[in-house]
View 1 (cartoon, one colour):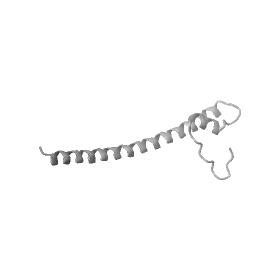
View 2 (tube, rainbow, N blue to C red):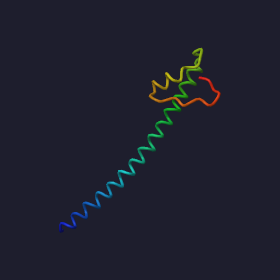
View 3 (cartoon, rainbow, N blue to C red):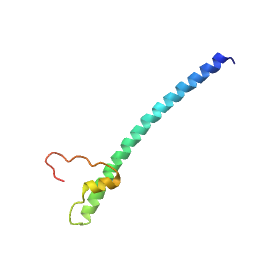
View 4 (cartoon, helix red, strand yellow):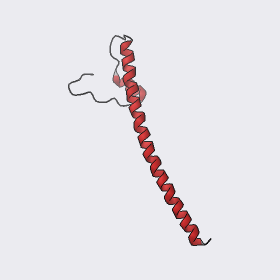
Amino acid sequence: MGVADRMWDAITTVIRMNDKVERMAETMKSQQQKIEQLNERLLRLEMAVQFGMGRGRLPDVRVIAADAGVAPAAPPDGAQR
């Protein structure tokens, strides 16, 4: 096998690896979105459980969100926190 053949093999390997890295990056983005959606759902569930347990008032969403490491979503127009 000559030098040119080895160089060609190396270049094709790098191209294949680049494709795999790009696919993995897309997969990671998708997984991150799913994780963020699950965190938001968990936050809402925690609030519902606390309210259902009769804590006397609704929990402060900002405190729960800070504990979970998630920024709370903005309330709809006209809604109060």
